[in-house]
Image (cartoon, rainbow over all chains, first blue to last red; front, side):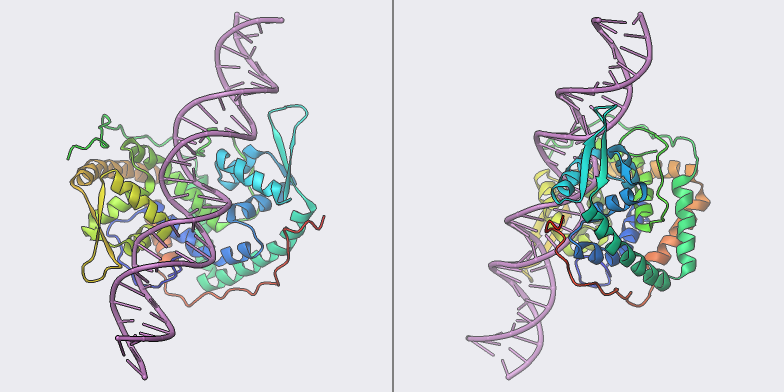
Length: 170
Length: 170
DNA sequence: GGCGCTTCGCTAACATGTTAGCCATATAAC
DNA sequence: GTTATATGGCTAACATGTTAGCGAAGCGCC
């Protein structure tokens, strides 16, 4: 369920396990409870992530937003442009370094965050109860191990020579 | 690291915890080791997910692919069209029910999967060693609790009346 | 058989993800 | 100072995500 197609059909499952896929499902399992709140205010997920990040640091540079919010630079360019048009953020070039840019919230955006933020927290509490606080705690711990862990570079297997799969070899 | 911007700067972290965000990072942390393999064969992540799913079931209907691969119907339409053009899959209407469609792999795709699949498995083993088999095991267990768990419907908090945030209220 | 209702895949419109590469600016080397 | 190199944000081109809604096909009911 919570599949965004709406229908709740007990579907076929794959035999093999696939961690990235599991992460994707888990993410959706949670996000589907927040999405309605965010879209209610006319925002997208990414826009909300960005506002929340700026809310913590007062101001951020695009590079930093990229890393904090897990958004690629080319995507961010578009998102920020739209947010600028919506009157949510401002972009100003730095004096010292003409390459860099500072992104800030407008008063309008601050009011929006002040209204939206508490609702997210409220919904979060509901979810925490439904999942069980122990599971949530467990999740944080495991995820930290995955992300924050200091492990050496993971080797990449060597690939075979590239074939021309596009060619119609019948 | 493994941020796709390439640069490894010890970035600022957010004070608040955000589970969906953590899932996104964790997913990327793994996927960045598989992506090179998949793109090496001229496929996208989604295309590979779909081929792998069909490989398990011989044939699938679009609805099923949507649910198994976590792809929304409108996205799938495009992906399948492209895969059809590339000669990877075929789409045939069902006789009994003219609404439904059957998606199958072409021989070309089967050869591709036969080459690509083992490489994924190989890389997976490398990752499992790097992360530690215990952590991987732990991950599967926790994720199953999140996804497969049978819990009642999670209530949605009530939203305030919609304001006109777009309007320039200065 | 006609009627309302549902299901299925689809289109349309927009936002974002992904890769490659450009351009101006800053920095280091000479 | 001039050159080479690196950095930061950007554009371009394509693939996918997301929401709303359409049209044809099946289904149940009368």
